[in-house]
Amino acid sequence: MADTTTDENNVQGSSKEAGNIKSMPLLGSASKGTNPSSRLEDLFSYVEAEADKAMAWYWQKKGSKAKLSRGIQLCAVVFTALGAIFPVATNLLREPLGLGTVDTGLLASLFVGIAAALIGLDRAFGYSSGWARYVLTATTIRKSLEEFRMDWAALSAKAGANPTPDQLVVFVARARDFIVGVQELVLQETRDWVTEFQKSTSQLDKEVGARLDALKSQIEKATLPPTPVPAPAQPGSIELTVPNADKADGFEFDVLLEGQDGKVTAEKIAAAKNWVRINVPPGQYKLSIGATAAGRRINTAAVIVVKSQEISKAEVSLPV
Image (cartoon, rainbow, N blue to C red; front, side, top):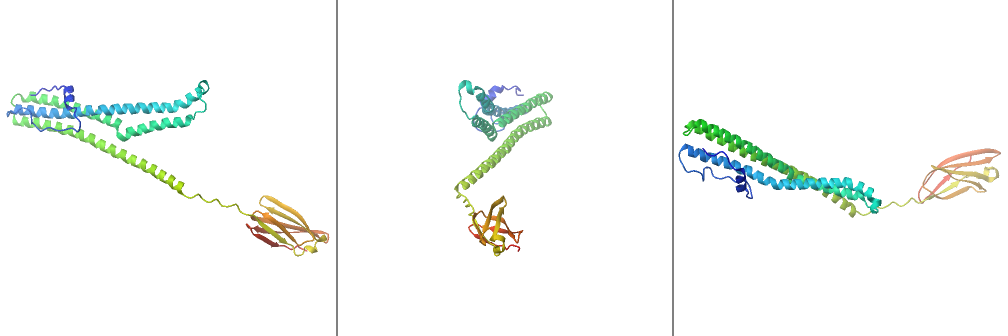
C-alpha cells in the first residue's frame, strides 16, 4: 500500500502554478505493475494527489484575497473612525492650533464616503467572501482526505497483500466516492462564486443605472430654457356713476371702497355724479355709497370686480 502521509508543504509548493486546477491522467505516471496491489497503489496515489492539488490551490489562492481583504477592511475602519473623530478633534483644537474656519462636515463626509467605497469594492470583487470560501473549501477537502486515508488503511488491513475481486471493487468504490466528493466541493465553491458574482454585478448595474438616470435628469434640467416668470398683474381702474346724486342734500355723497384686506379709500363727492379711482389692484371690491336726503341718512352698496389694465364701470343709484 502507498504511504498515507504526505508532506503538505511539498504538495503546496509543487502546486503553486497560475491558472485553474488541472487534472492528471488516471494511473498515468505511477507504477506500471499489473498485480492488484500495485494497481491499488497507483489508484491511491492518483486520488490523493488530486485532492492534495485541489487543496493546495485553495490555500495558495486565498493568500492574495486575505491580504486585499484585510487591507480594505483596515482602511475602511480607519476612514470611518476619521469621519467620526475629525469634527470633534477639530472643534477641540480649533483655538489652540489656530485652525480657523475648517469645514469639518465636508471632510467627515469625504472620509465616510471613502470608507463606503472601499466596502463596496470589497463586495464587488469578493475579496473577503472569496477568502472565506477558499479557507472553508480547503479545510473541508483536508477533512475528507484524512477520512479517505483512514478508510483506505482500514480496507488495506482487512484485504491483506492479495485482495479478492470483491475487495478490489470496494477499494475502487471508495476512491471514486472520495474523488467525486472532492470535485463536488470544488463545483459547489464555483457555484457560490458565480452566484455572488452575478449578484454583485446586478447590484452594480442597478446603482450605476440609477446614478446615470439622476445625472441625465440633472443635465436635462440644466439644458431646459428657464421657466418664464409671470409678470406682476397690472392695476385697473374703477369708474362709479350715481345717476341720482343730485337728489341728495347738498348734492353730496360718500364713497367707501373695501377690499379683502379692509378699507382701501373713503371719499366725499360733491356736485358730481361720477367717482373715479385709478391704480386699483385686480380683485373683488365692495362699494358703499351713502348720502343724506330730506334730512335722513341713506346707504347702498355694490360689488365690483377690477381686472388688470381695464376700467371697471358701476352704476349705483341712491335709494331716494
